[in-house]
Length: 201
Image 1 (tube, rainbow, N blue to C red):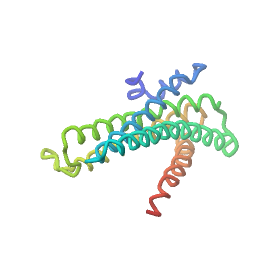
Image 2: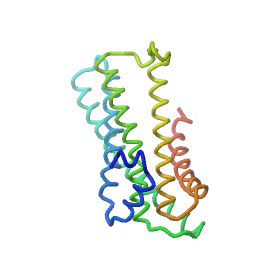
Image 3: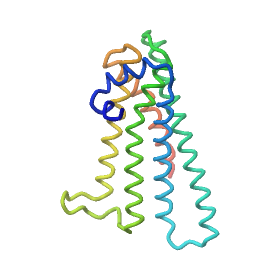
């Protein structure tokens, strides 16, 4: 399935929307959330340093709760994206499309974020186990580890957006420009909301 998503996303989404359930999408979104949540836990352990055992217990509990909230947030984003796209497509552009089909294609689009979360786990785990500074420059390519990591994450995010646009075209019968707009609106809004806290720190 994953190979088909990579090589022939349009044909893949057509097959998926012909099915009745959203089970696979639920799993994909959950995996993406778990990967991202897990990377947060590992990065938190990397920042522990010399901490008392009592403090570590509370630290672990707090980060487990945070990871759980990340998973819940990813599911909420899934519903928000699908709902926003369905609303704009139906009431602004007047195009057809079932909410169930949007849930399917948007859910599968989260596979890109799942890969990003997996890479984050490897990145954070490698730093923790090998005690490597993330600002170290990689000799062969001349890039800092963090720079390479951010570059790969940006590529995966763009791929995720591409999958969403492709899926929206299949599920709503909109053209390319409208599909891009339907994806950009909710994604831009969610990115803006996530950026607000950093404006006050």
